[in-house]
Length: 424
Image (cartoon, rainbow, N blue to C red; front, side):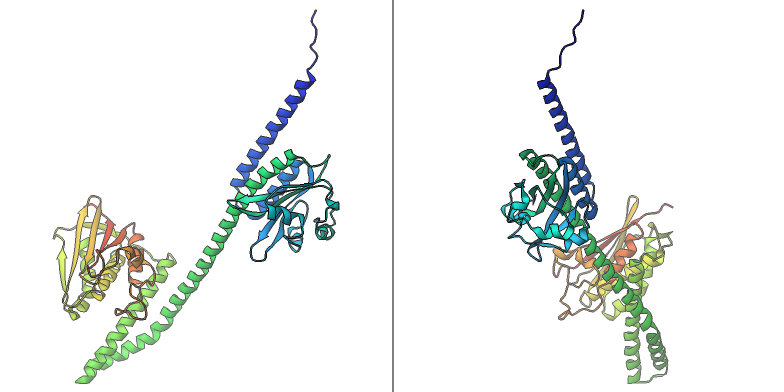
């Protein structure tokens, strides 16, 4: 004969309590994971208030955040209420329950909220909601308090210390998640401003390049006609006009190339060609400019072809910009070295000058758009500051690399370019 043992009521109660705590911990862990994977601020706020309402078994929960520009609290979210309508209500820090929690940085339980003189009745009147019991905890972020998380109207009984512990955990996780979402939103807004600014700049460059090209073509045409028919001093004058107009056209070409690179519209036609041919194309473009400054061009590459897989025209243009840069920042009668060597599956080419050099801490900045080492009001060398930017864009668009090396001021500069090699 078997007897059925009577249940131990004490153990059964403990077991239920343990199960309840286990479910609570799992829910808090789920909340933490969800908060850390959500970066949409509005979605975060709604999730926090809904979870607080569920776990504390109350009628509603709300989040009040601190407004740094206007020293006050404002409702960012609340269960079952319109956030926009709540946001219209300024909550004073010095004469409200939420303000007291915010100032003291301590939790507050009020199981008879309506009788407390700090109860801010304007909120209840505005949204037609009667507050009977209230629990509020601060929302800490690092060594500051970003706001207050409140739970309102416990469904059974009043709020307890256990509720304080639960809501404090939610508030701590919520503060971190809200701060991360705010940082992301600020970063996105900053990036959007940069994008709009860059678009305006690109549109201006494109428009200026287009609009100036027609009148400049007329100037060049008349200057060429005058040069052919001029005699005596007029010949030199015509040469000066034609030289200045040609220089301006080169600047417009650079502006147009920069615009195409920024818009990712520069078409690359890769082919197998020797780096010597590419460098010779570039040298042909600048040799007269070098001759005017009595500069010597020294070739430091072998006769045997070193093959690369590049767009010849675009790569040559990149080296033209590097060579023009070397001419511009080097003294007359100095030497410019152009070299190339095979390095495994890649080809290294370089342009070395003995000019003014680049401070070591500025080596990475010289490729930035419109960057000038010299102050704009006192500089002695011309240029828009986009030649190196274009060179970098053209090289990197072909899976190449470009960088500058210099020992510092007065020590000259070497620009090195690594390009993908090609087999015979």
